[in-house]
Image (cartoon, rainbow, N blue to C red; front, top):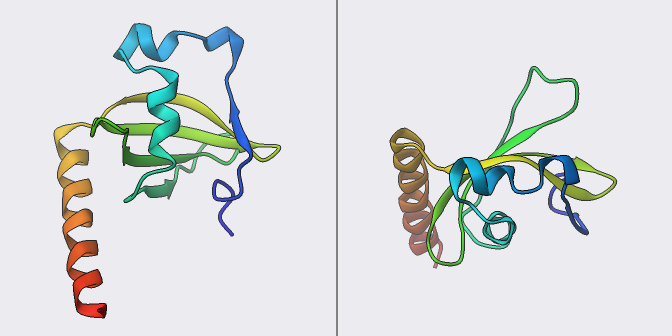
Length: 107
């Protein structure tokens, strides 16, 4: 099982409280929504002192977000969240189209 799949909640660092809102106008709840909607693309983000991942996904109002996160004690700890770049959005949409095509051929 992937570490984020068995998470039991979210951990928000008080020192960073409000940072994502101030920098990118993304509320904490929007970030959390990404992990409960499909498709969710997650890739390992090497080169840090702890295991980190980046995710591309959608919040409930179809806002496409990029989320950098780690998992600590079965809780997702968001490091940063912002709107996807044009390149990320294209990769996400291409992935979504492939998934839809694959799902139709399996039926």
